[in-house]
Image (cartoon, rainbow, N blue to C red; front, side, top):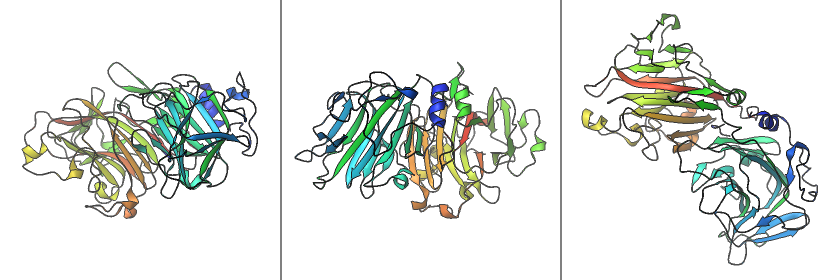
Length: 467
């Protein structure tokens, strides 16, 4: 279940807290309505024909075998294992879509949002095969592999699936039989996605599935939601973020007020030692609305006063100085090394460190590495002096990290053997969020090694309580 991602004006808040009035899985869908029904829902399928649907007009046109049988749209591979999508003729931007789905496995299907030719949308996967993903997010590659969808999915039976697509970047949420199994916001900075488009259902194709393998959809309907209703933050001209009512309702809270270090403590030190500027002797201060980590001081990290973060979504901005060596601690504790009793996401001057230190960095030591365990997939660090954004999600053993909109890793830590530190199974399951400060590799140009701002977190209730 993810997370950034992110209720939502009155209409969306209602959608988040009120069960949808969908028919029972065994019911036959009513004839397509020309106007919204109670709750704003509009039927997309009359139960008899494919009126209102098309196989052309999206990014993944194809030639699958689509029929209507017993009040359901049925998709199968066509001769030659051909697949493709069936799209709505109508275009939708911010909305909820729901349907009942039944898969005769093994079969690979999905629900697609904002589909247009040559523009990027996204897929909620319905891949009912060994090793398949139910309600992961795919768009020209994996954006997020699900953590809870497969447990909620009932193969071979009718399942009620509801998805929400809102905002820009898209916030994508999915429920199976009323259980929220995905909550994911596409990171900022990825290549542009379509702002509106068709809704699609899929036959993957190319699988040479058994003759009886198929996907069935019925009770398909949509309700449109207010544009921009899902934004948790507003951004000022100077780049600082403020929570909206939507963000507060979605559970976001600020960890840094831009004025002082309320809610923070230096490593193993009494919070009452804070002076007007922060803890300058410890190596931290607040200046110009920034939480600054200094090049000198006697505390190796600063941490949240709260020590029980377990499943959460986190975002922050950071700005490096030359030869900075820092990091982001997650679920760490004060007993021992917080890089390894919880974990650390590396922050480093990748541009100059090796030359200045005369050392060779391990792949996981570059910015974005899960320290001691996982190298970043690519470099996404902006030049010295520019603001960067980390977006991190921690749910159980699953962790996901994006830097400036580029997904660096999405891993199940239970499958990783660290090159440094204890196996993740032996590490703390909950702890503080913190920022590290190390000494530089050589002479620096500033007494400020790193600056932080726009630090926000929201707890995630993996049982479905947070929305």
